[in-house]
Image 1 (cartoon, rainbow, N blue to C red):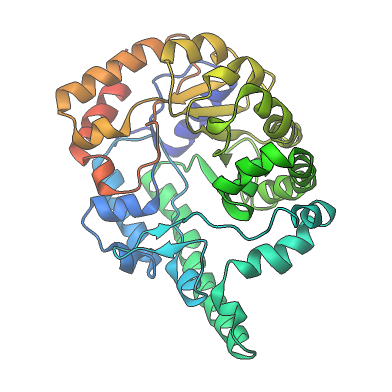
Image 2: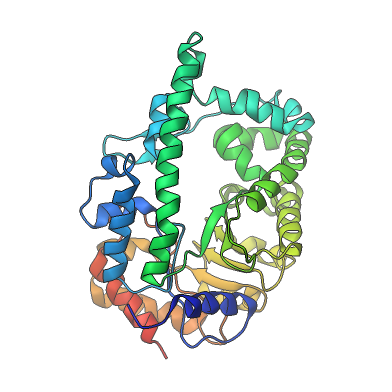
Length: 382
């Protein structure tokens, strides 16, 4: 790790997003907490019950790999989901929490969601994701109490220590909370992917009404979870899911209006964003130019570096496009060649942060020695 201090790294990310020059290219290590555990030889299953394992593994990994910023030092604890027999997040044999294809509301119930989103989420979406809740009283309430106690203890242990670790390492967390665009929330937590695309084709007005109703609630979630005193940093994380599968007409009609509304409203309050543009967004570049300027760190998964630079490089900070798959199975020389190829296109003129195209989750995603070599190269790039 270089002698740059915490504040200098924060300033580098803020400057990159706001379009000011930086002394070097900021390097963003975008990973789930369990990647650090797995990559350093830790026990994943134990880490989902003991947050200190996540903290210690992150400390070890960052001591070996150069970076200027981390994603949120976070992973979901297994206690709540296992105790409540969740059908939304299910622990694998190894310990990773997997999100299967599932749904919690019928198409007809989207009307109820549009009329009262908070009530419908609390009384139907949340409860239907937990098999244990349907056991007789008081067994169901006892299980919920035990699950909440365990989950609170896990999260408190993780949250209280991750800020101290970030300060100790001198490496800021680029984001510490997240929210979602309404259609992404519907597709991941309410209707499931298969159902939401059927809904869009058959009952588009019902989907749009649900998105409109969810917008204030999801906007509030992004704002209320924000813990830092300065809204300028860290950023709010927006994962995306649905747009990769939409055509331009669908994107403009059902996804973009509430997505843009949320970003505009939060930007007006002083927030900045990390948006993970999952899949290929090239057909939407001209549309998303209307998003708030100097507020977005855009992490792109697919597409041409030259095209995204040409289309969006003057209004948001660009990142991503470096293939995780190469770090996982490529030779060091090929990894470095790819880094140079991308940086040569993306870095000139600034507004650039180096990151992979996807979040690191599994040790097989990226070999530590390849990350070390690529991050060192990018940090020293002139």
